[in-house]
Image 1 (tube, helix red, strand yellow):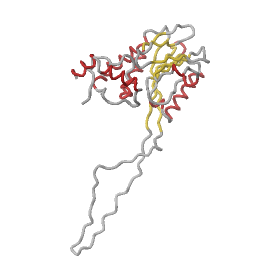
Image 2: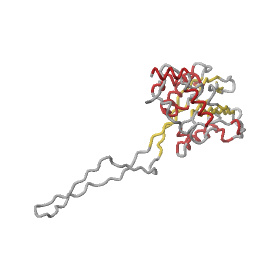
Image 3: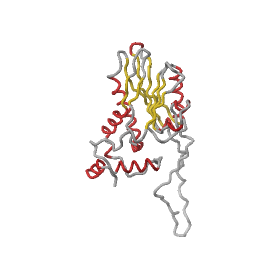
Image 4: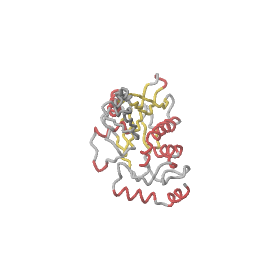
Length: 276
């Protein structure tokens, strides 16, 4: 039996909920929208937040797929009275199975300057599994990253996924290994193209309030990541379907596993489980 939260309760975790990776597609789409909404009323005059979409097709022709039927239907040869078998009709032609290329959508939030024809000032990326896995999706993301750097656009990258290969700009700079965390954010300011601001994010702590750089004459605005994650969780009603007894993939460290189990056994959790 699935153990879930009451839909009106927040996630049991104080920061990022690692179980949200089970519902990443829907959660990611909501998170992008709420980030746009959160920033919209804080931007200075002339700047607007917009959701940008890039669509491409991922070639899956090289992926071998096999299908085994659940039921086999056989026809025995019909025999005459004399015992001579009658030839069957010609076999039905067998097709070559081909698959459509998978459509991949990359979503991000862009802050544009409406007074200069929509010039992009800042792009905010929330990474998806496609961005962190080998294949065209990761290549497209890295190309987009390079294009933004070349165009002197501020870049904010938010990685809330534990699986996959690091794709953020943190891979290009030297960071003390002891300070590197799976969850993290990176900020690249167009004014300082030779540096990256790295924000480590602990599973056990509240998500940070991130600075969002704008034009050189503007002060940073602040994005409260915990607020938008909480909003996406509660409005998505993920507490009604997430099974918190299901093993995580990839698994947490032994120390974090013990900590998470303690969190999920807490009083609020027990109350939620009995109400579901």
